[in-house]
Image 1 (tube, one colour):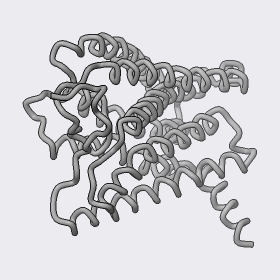
Image 2 (tube, one colour):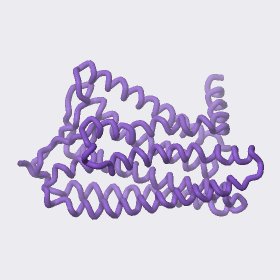
Image 3 (tube, one colour):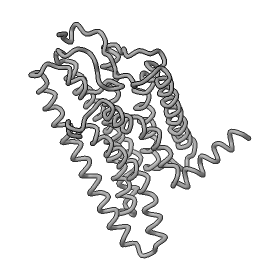
Image 4 (cartoon, one colour):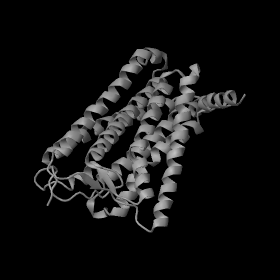
Length: 308
């Protein structure tokens, strides 16, 4: 039996298989990581470079790309290094740091997606008041509030989790440090404080989710009242990327944290964690750029200018 004061490191869950499969995992994660860096990096540079994209929607998209870069950089490089060097070790401080930044970035991203749903609501349902509702100062304040809430949420959970005595060893059954897996290492009677913190966090998440649902109900009602088919298509086109990103983020995240224990296994936990922590940051740039003509045109001008 060990306690948290005697633990100097944790053992992460390795990707099972032979040495060749570990190297395959390294190459696969490297490809996904580079795709995420390239896609999100291009979106950040393009939006910052093209003044035509200095609008609320693209300002929030720039913030989302920064969060996606941070999120995938928190978990994937350490997992790749462990596979490359055939080790499972992460230091106690490294694990706490990983938990903090992952929670901070995920919480901020969910808050930002909620704000982006309001942006689409204002653009489609109240177009005449759009500039008033989402002026530059309002956008900065809303983004700052999202980042601040993410920091506070991460600080609360990280401090609370790592103050618990850990009596069940140091093996974390996940490829990165994740609070539900660390709580399994705590003493059976000592995790009720974290349960209350989790209840508060889940309640706030549920409020944000309901806000997004209500926003899109109003958006769909407004779009269906547009008389022309071309107008309806154009309005839907501005919402579909955000709706796709929200669906991917919420479905994988909710399944990861709310799935019943009866269907839980190491392989399933590993697959689900990859789906909600690794895939969205790599896929989001593709989702936003596929149907966005303004972004594709600005990106084309940027690339053309670089090679002239």
